[in-house]
Length: 127
View 1 (tube, rainbow, N blue to C red):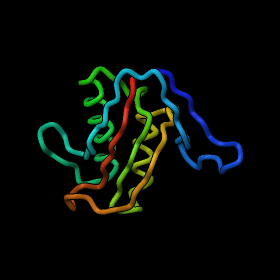
View 2: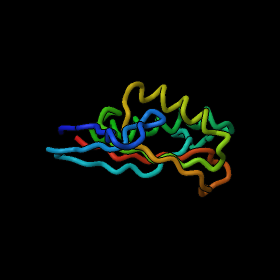
View 3: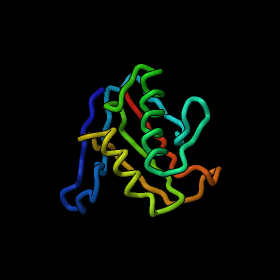
């Protein structure tokens, strides 16, 4: 896979850890991960957003590993938060997991299927 990150010179720069556009060529596989929530493998879910956000990224890593990919393969992230107050916890967990990687990104403030869920993240990965 070849990846080219692009931020148009005549448009605003990204205001966070993302890239406005990512062109992927010569990809042989694309994986669409369903939204991952902050639930452990045993079904338990911590009450706080920070712990849930860390679990979400652990779950994303596990799902990618299961298909032979890593966080390096992510080209698009969509984060859904029911409460804007949890944005800092989300960003901290994302930065810890993603480091310098800057995929295309969308943030939505919207309800989730369960009031216990503080965050949900879906990704698209290419190899």
